[in-house]
Length: 274
Image (cartoon, rainbow, N blue to C red; front, side, top):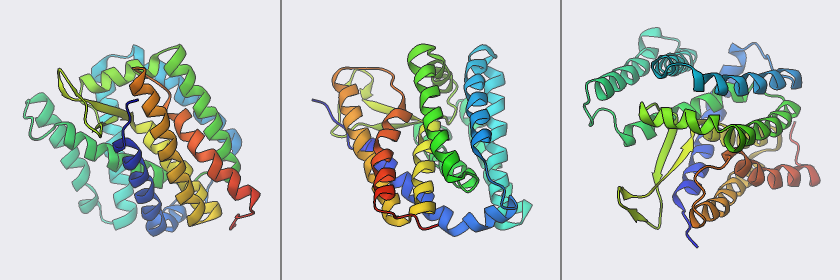
């Protein structure tokens, strides 16, 4: 049996940071959105759009995909920064750094400016920002519906259509910060060097979002239970994937299997803090 502790530990850390950042800036973000919230019908439409977009991404030219993601990530970092700082000349720093590192690192082929370590840092930053930025918009019912529908969509796009896998290959080819790659621990060496595990930005956002929603609704204990549960679930699933050499598997399914016990325990023991 092959197992890994890096990815589960990384997921726990990312979810914990996302909750702490939301605790500090969440109210400021909610006031910016004027207390608007996504309802069940909104998340149904959102998941449908996400599924369609994944399929469209497979068909559009790769460079168009690169431009789309660079713009989206730049706008995300700028918007979040200006909400927090209120100063545009400070908020523009991170997007400029991101675009400059990508441009000179990829198109000018300067590896020390853009490599797997830099990509991992930006994936983590984007995952936390997306989680915190959108986390306050979900009602509890919308969160549950979103979790179920997104998992179903992910299963279809990974195991049946394969579109999610194709988008991931494009992201790797053009070095887009859509996947984080972490070395397996205990280490496994292959012909290319140390074996790595890849985890998509969407999966990181999903794990962070579900833990954040438990924090908002049931408090710290349930949120920590969620983080631990997701990490344990990933440890078990990842061991099976590595042992039986399964190349692609829906990360959302692993996440929701770890989140459900925390959510259900909160319901059973009445830990609703709202």
